[in-house]
Amino acid sequence: MRNSFVSRWLTWVAMAVVFSIACWYLSQWQFARQQEVSNINRIIEQNYDAKPVALEELLLPKTIWNSELEYRPVRVTGNYLLESQFLIRNRPNEGNPGFLQLMAFETDGGAVIWIERGWLPTGSKADAPDHIPITNKIHRQVVLLLRPAEPKLDRTAPKGQLPSIDLQRASASLKDTNVYNQAYGRLVFESPQSAKGLMMPKPGINNGNHLSYALQWLLFALMAFGAVFWSINQDRRRRAGQAPKKVKFLTRDKDAEAEDQILG
Image (cartoon, rainbow, N blue to C red; front, side, top):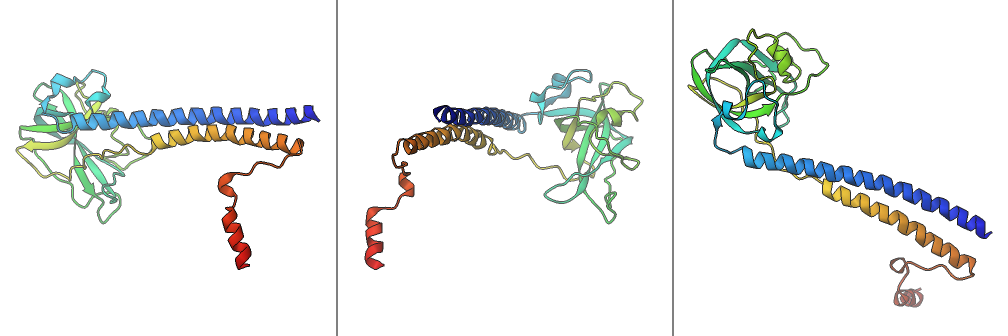
């Protein structure tokens, strides 16, 4: 009997150990997610409203993208390449469907950077906006927020459109090889100005619930062991002929029981 008792509860302890290990890894995953969110928030706070600097001071066409540069304002002078532009599909803004206008811009230094010129609402036909802003080749200065290139999506798109800001695919239409394919710029300001779409809003600073979820997983791990050892203790009391312990917050107050008897 004793061997059966020990064997049964060793099985439950082993299951609690496995469950707790799973909870531990899930908590570490949530801690990692929290760290990622904190890093993103830090980059937005330190970069978004910084003073613009020349693009070449931070990034060159062949350098590797550094995530610390995201949303960093930069200055560029040059002119748009009107024959090289795309609409980026499936870009909601405040709950409304739409597109982003992406256009190539040749800098005075001879490089080409892609510029996102704002958001355009879906028109009467779902495949395109009703109106696409038209600019010109006039020499101008622009201020951009640096953004990383987006991954290639295995989706089709109509001519003149792309499913994502896949700069490698967009740059295939260019003759120039000195192209920024690791990053593009979100247009903040240009002089002289021309018609453009709505600028996408500043990303919100939100820490999310990852920290509380991580602590909950650790609590679940402790509760698993607590439940097993409580049950073992209850089982031992029953085997010894003793009454099982009652959980205090589940037992009724004696005064309340006396009141029930009087009223009943």
